[in-house]
Length: 133
Image (cartoon, rainbow, N blue to C red; front, side, top):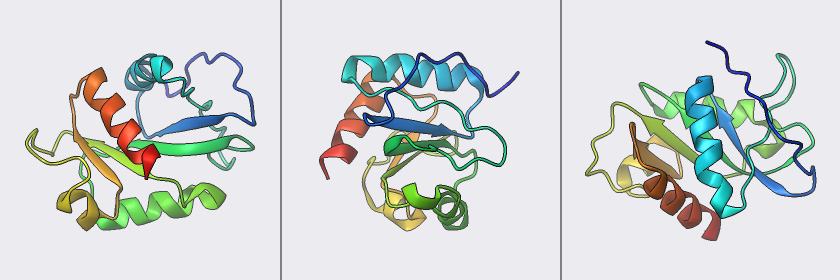
């Protein structure tokens, strides 16, 4: 399996979501779920390139099996000039009852936290909430 998926061209000036550390199936599903929101997914960066490149990144979505403050801090560093954008973490180690933007997310240094698997509706609600802030 590869992290590379086919992406339609994304307007560099239009805000987009950046999906990090997700396999191709999950990245494709996130892309499909965000289409109704009008939020395209930025292409996966080439190795050594800055995530997001010249795109206007509005949000980063990261698949972290074992999330920690150190992982989220490393993601912000890895995002470089986009390190200020909200980070939504997806994890199999999060209970469904955890509030997306609650204390667990804040303790990790993330802006949002969703259990994995999640639904398209839950992801879209989280994205709308994070982009309003």
